[in-house]
Length: 113
Length: 110
Image (cartoon, rainbow over all chains, first blue to last red):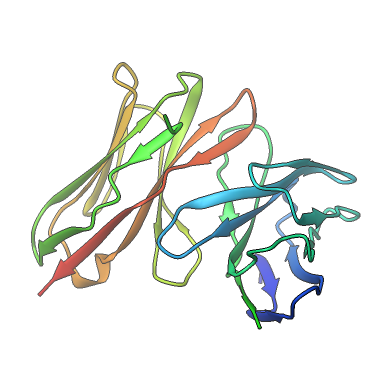
């Protein structure tokens, strides 16, 4: 099946720990995105990448890091510098150029122990 | 001012009612628009694309007014299953970026 997968569905982080959220797509999309969503709030852009080996900060990049070594994969690391990481994290991808929109993965819910 | 603004609601309507949401955008360079539906604790899913003046799909109609810079979503004959949050999205082709509104929550009651 074609689509975007995120794992794990739920993730628990201890104080001072770095954790990595996985995002994989087999849609041959060029661009990939990470968003954070807090309860009852809209989406906030963390990082995005429009091409392999290149990525840009979004509106709330502090405390997060990403890599884009392969077209299919865009993992997000939540570092210990992110003091309030509890949220719903959504990965998305799209074809660049034209009028295409984004498609989302099922999300990862991160909780702090 | 936010680039894409929506009334957060909630809109509480009875089954069978017609309900409309508006969304305003500030970037006049935006060329295409989308409505997404997001159920509680789930990812947003594409509902409709709006490239020209409007689009219709069954009970759902989206309209675009470029002069006034707003997009609307009309839902006719509301169903209980329409209860969700509806996100408005503007695409700026020049920057190749999508900007999401904060969402409008709809609750359809029996």
